[in-house]
Length: 214
Image (cartoon, rainbow, N blue to C red):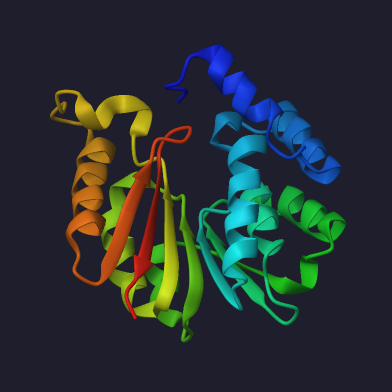
């Protein structure tokens, strides 16, 4: 997922705000106990999510893909005093580690977990969001977009992770590669949708930032 030379990548990380101790602890536990720990947002991207959330200062955040809770905690750092974050995931086995670190982070009361298929849960969320972070199963990205766009407030921000997909988006598409196919469709959707202003950032595995026009 690293497209920059290692020395440049290391330099950018070393000149980024230090990872909070609680998140460093969560990183260690994720790598010790959870399969596919590379799915973690991690220090550099986590600080980016944090500072973007602080700039936006959202009252409501929607996250698709909780994993072990790292990105949710980073995003919660920018919530208003009475703000709330709704995070969706299908993996019940991860809830114990999520709950542990949500408590330790001090954001427990602001974070609301939803367990199940996002395609089923999203239509039941009768609220609007100032910030959405999409980091769930890639084949459903286009379908998630269709369910999310009307729930995003004017001026709201949609952040989407893994949009470069280890560079596969610029390689010859394999017939059975549903994830890359969906990402190609999704990337075109957010780049051309008249309701959005979008910029794609070549950060880690690719992060697109879309603003809904007022």
